[in-house]
Length: 168
Image 1 (cartoon, helix red, strand yellow):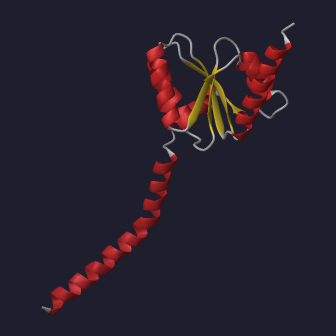
Image 2 (cartoon, helix red, strand yellow; image 1 turned 180 degrees about the horizontal axis):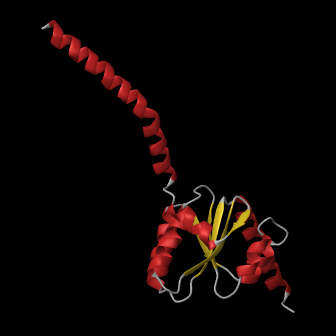
Image 3 (cartoon, helix red, strand yellow; image 1 turned 90 degrees about the vertical axis):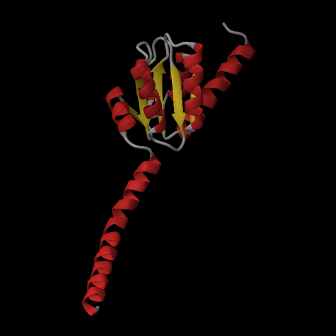
């Protein structure tokens, strides 16, 4: 039986991870086997710059943190080496960065994830990774709203130009 201080430390880890998972909008679990320290450092830097928290953590801690929650089903993939990436704001950042990284590294694998409190499979994570960022989506929507107004302005300007040519 572990001593009291070790047990208390593990309980704090479970409580902390449970809190982080409950506030995250999306999370991705990965098997990070076989990556170099330099690759891991670069990956962590990119995730951090995009507001994603990436942590290597024991499967037993993750299993206990999701126990009794809507994402308890994620426990099925908790085997081998596991790291978890959590994002509190951007739905696509973790999936986009980790899927891109997995394409270039044979041993690095996406296990599963969750989105708004629901467990999602690898195919859903891949689909999520292919979505553009929030900023790109907002720019696309703005240009879609702006296009009819711009077309109207060009039409009015053409009428004005035509009338000024006729007057000369």
